[in-house]
Length: 40
Image 1 (tube, helix red, strand yellow):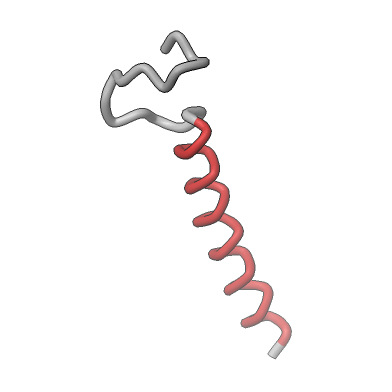
Image 2 (cartoon, rainbow, N blue to C red):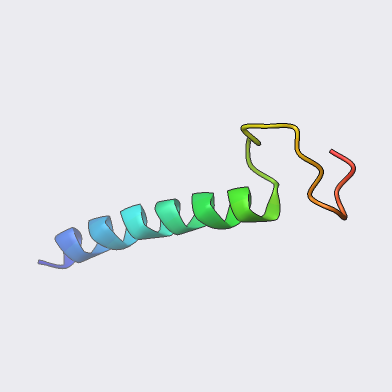
């Protein structure tokens, strides 16, 4: 039981982490768009 919960939490954390990273522009940007603060 617990193992399944931990596994799902791990997946969620990974997805959320990716979303936050891309939202902040720290992930792999698909395009080279100026996000304002970031010169990249």
